[in-house]
Length: 147
Image 1 (cartoon, rainbow, N blue to C red):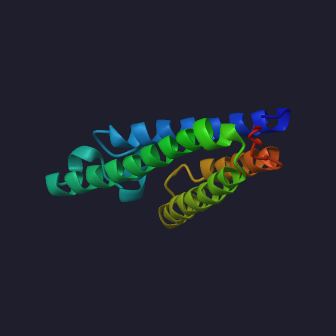
Image 2 (image 1 turned 135 degrees about the vertical axis):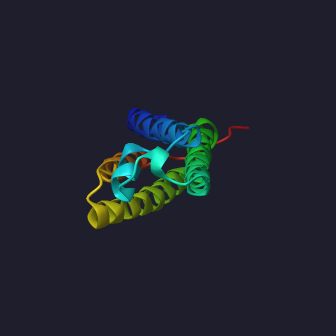
Image 3 (image 1 turned 60 degrees about the horizontal axis):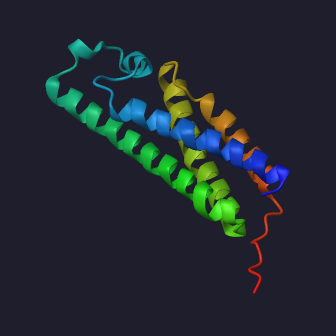
């Protein structure tokens, strides 16, 4: 890897680790996040047991999705990215923009509808990191195998 690609690798690595952290946070939560409470207008204890179970299941699903995306990014970085395979930069870029763009759309929509302090502002930052990682990683070439 060249200097630029090392910077791109580091930026993508940061995004992958953040995604894993976010996934762990959601997957192992035992109650809803503070911004969920703001949106619903109730504390956790005020919510019926069945609704609590559904909320936790949805949070675990979001957590699982983030864990999967984070692991995929790390695997792509550690194997094909380090080999210099061009397709991996496009894959991480496109998947990352779509995933974080959708997360932004959802969290911002909840913020607008409820005035809850959702973490919508994190996703434009993540998208900016993904764009930077992509730009720094442009020009990757697969290493030629010499015989």
